[in-house]
Amino acid sequence: MKYLIVYEKSENGWGAYAPDLPGLGVAGTSFDEVKELIREAVEFHLEGIRQHGDAIPAPTAKTEYITV
Image 1 (cartoon, rainbow, N blue to C red):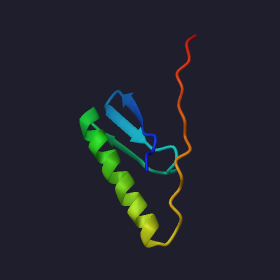
Image 2: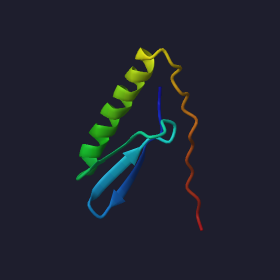
Image 3: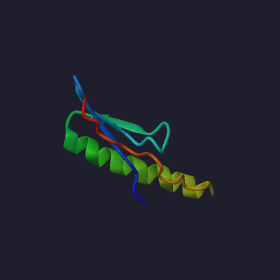
């Protein structure tokens, strides 16, 4: 499954979250660190959902850039 991941730069580093997985987010000091952390967090989160016998949420988030 492919999930959209949003990466955001902050004053102190980077953050990332998956819009299709509410409540799931990570933060770190470097972009590379956050890329690794979010992958691990998504995998761990989905494994927990499976273990509880719940349905895995389908990826539905979309992105688009607009020119203004």
